[in-house]
Image (cartoon, rainbow, N blue to C red; front, top):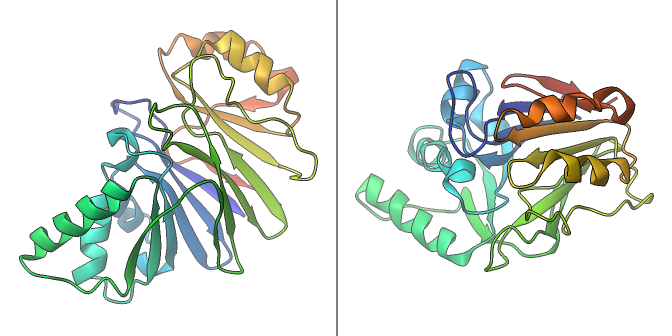
Length: 242
């Protein structure tokens, strides 16, 4: 399994960081987790065939996690006619609005047989025999429609916390049955000190911290980078799990 960080900024893009998005590659298939970055442009520049993308999984419906989605879906409906994928959104209003918007952009009804929009909730969301995705709720939104994910593929597991609440009571508890090789978490909605406490209690062999704001939090986190096996990915960084 390979994880590429397409966007690593917090809620606002910067001169060298797009908003949140990751690309998981397992074998010849690819999957998007969040689409806050301009994913259509980034996939094109990387020479990644849109048809390789078999799933899109959105943690929650904030703009910095979804703003690049409509461009990707629009191109997939009319230009890249070999695309066949499933899109998972946590809020039924998302399915309604994206359906209406894509039809508006085409000025007609379109066939969603190739581009299937789903509403998901907690539990097993997806399994195509290559990658499985489990959704775990967070307390980031008052309406409860925010999640992290557990990805499993090629005998490897990646735990993505998603955006969390300030107290981090929704930070994942360690489960040795998951055998997580990589933990991906955020530090925009909590203090770095509390996050470090939670990471220390979650003994993944590697933790990537992204979606950080304010930026001075990096200094506090970096002081523990060695003993907690922390890294701080930037846009374009690729982590290979072997």
